[in-house]
Image 1 (cartoon, rainbow over the protein chains, first blue to last red):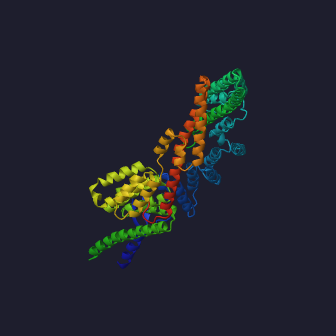
Image 2: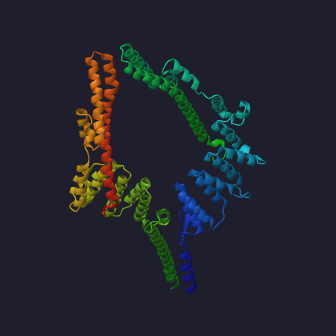
Image 3: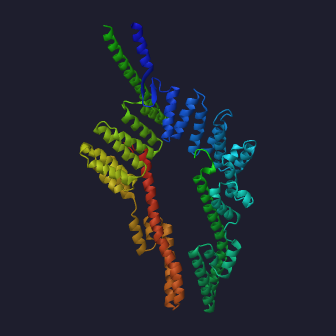
Length: 286
Length: 279
């Protein structure tokens, strides 16, 4: 009887209660408690702490699911360099090896280092057909649109994307092949012929009108002052006319650069948001 | 006899389970608190969250959330801090705890510069009968809200309602007196170009502005007198008005910049030299 009393006492001290979906033992830092707490933090989107707790769990129990989850937390925190490192160390024997490799390449892509992404893709592609079936080839091709490099032939390019996306990709391809940029030379010539016209060509209407008025206004003042015999004022306004005229030509040429950069910026933003919308064309975690 | 003993054993087991689990939770609370006191705020948040996760009896629901919020506040994560102060507020066990959480939300809003929200909260607290004995503290934090909103006259009024706060009342009053009136600088510059700059202590700029306005004003008027209407319009429009407008903008800008220096000096003192409670 005495023995059973102690057994009960010890038993109840070790396992207090089993409530809901987790077990509360006397040790809040037991591996199982660390894991359920880490899962809770992950659900709460407190990824940094979740990663710490998963790391703590790993120091007790090797577990490839947790390794994968740690890498995922870094990816969700947009820490793509760290995510790539963590995805890359998942063992070949793990059932997560293939998704980890795909996520590894995706993370490198997300760091913005496209050259490294292409290198790792080409390196990983050898004897790894799953990269093709995962949609990674689409991402590889898409990277050419982002860098502004010469694009492959249209047929070779488009065939790598899912049929449902090809029309949209074709539009992007055509844009990438022949971007609707304005010509600096044209803008300069326009402004030389009619002051301000080059600015209007780049959609800067008020700047164009101002350049027109300023050049012609100071020009007229110069002419009028010379005519009235006020030579000094004539020269001052004449110099201003030359300044406005030259500045208007130079300004139009630089405005084209800004205009083109703006167009390119919008295009890249469209590409990126489309890519995110399509989950990078990857067929995991959809 | 044996059956009786079984009952005792059963209740002992239950009691033991309850007591031991409570000790674990208490230990976790003390551990978290030690981390907080050691200013290890990141770890303190983790451990308080662990405590909340395992504390099924919700004994520390208020304290843990309050400390998590304080830790976030220390790390300048003000929105997170407010979220946890709000949870603490919902778990307050009495009016004092409720008041503390609400005041912390106000203080964090002040730091986050969502001042109008802080003032709204303080007004609603003032109207709440449960906090009728704490009107002094409410006025005190309202004063701070006005300081952060750069309304030193209103801050003076609020601090003057708190008997023990003569220091802050006088300080805010002095800052208010020291500041330049932007409207006054603007008006005198309209009447006499350059006077706004001179008012704010920028004598050279004021005289220069006056000189330009006299020169272009003279040339404009002279052109009209000489019947050179086009010259008069161009000089008046492109030069005189341009310098006149510049003088107006400059005087307002100088007054605002000088006020900013005064405010920054005052804030610097409050941050480093004032020993009372701060947001």
